[in-house]
Image 1 (cartoon, rainbow, N blue to C red):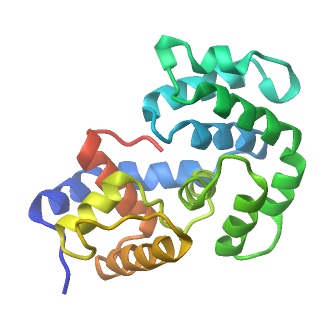
Image 2: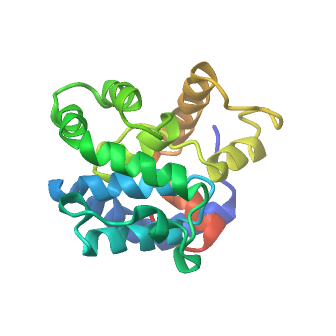
Length: 207
């Protein structure tokens, strides 16, 4: 039977209530905040999660969804710098204009794995990781966010190869299944294990 190392086991015992509370927060995100959670997930790749969170808050305070803002200038601010800010600003603006269609996908009765496929088709800037991240952050669970902290851990416990490259859908799905099975054997939700491994890497629980 696969087991987490003792350090991770002890960390889960310490953080389990905080992790469960965070998952409940995701489930309670109001619909009017979905757009800003999408913005957050667009900003996190190749940038600090803390900076993406700052950007999200700034755009929420400015009510970007209902107002015009200079998104690129906000993203390139050194206090909350987001890499590839010009492209990401364009993605955010495009998805803002298309958000009613995005919302239809979120609210339909399809399984979460189908929602993810449909989101990737219409959300500019989303791949499998970003779509999974977005759905998780608004309470749609069961998908793996294959960020570097998860890949690193799966390599450390010998479940995937050291030189693996997740550069196609087939590989993403294969590694996702590995991670889901791993979490199940540990009697953890996918989302619990994700937050636990993130906390182990960074010392904090964000999103």
